[in-house]
Image (cartoon, rainbow, N blue to C red; front, top):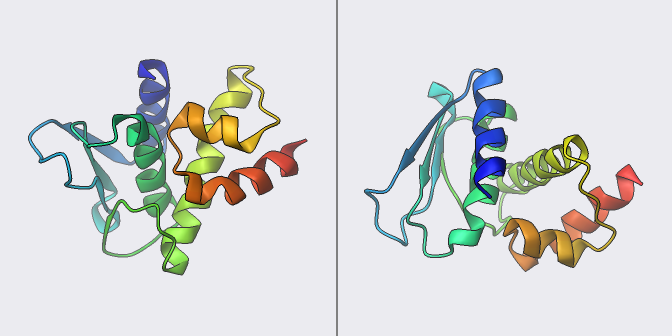
Length: 132
């Protein structure tokens, strides 16, 4: 996952998005995007460490989507902005896979590999089928 994190950070920098990784937050404190400042802060002590790359992709998604204000990471798509950030985040992970010749046909396997919460498997299914 270290290579993926590096790729996501470089992707963010290439799109003028700052990334701050921190180990000073509590394990239940979510990663956050500050879209107005083009900045994401990633909690590297998150209680579900396998979700950290997806949370980074998700928070980058908020900034790239032009969402206003502050957004704390949640896999629950209870707003249009959260749903769109999930789609963008999953899209970034698929872009990484395409660039690194990693293939998936099973959305559950894709979600497990990249720490995407299973509640979002349906988005992975749609995105995987759109690139086939």
